Image (cartoon, rainbow, N blue to C red; front, side):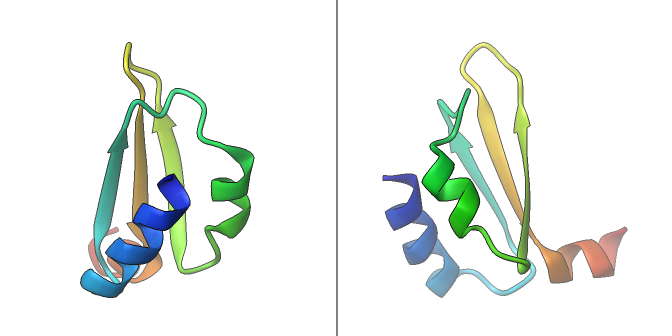
Length: 63
């Protein structure tokens, strides 16, 4: 499900966008394998879990 959503969102976001998924305490391995060099990710260990996926261009601009 995450992977399908990521594919849809990639088409709608610019290359420097941010995607948040909730309920992502442990994202499925296939999602992590499919996130390529254009994206960086981190899981925020909250009670419900938040997966933050950030476009690499966003990091170049703002960090």
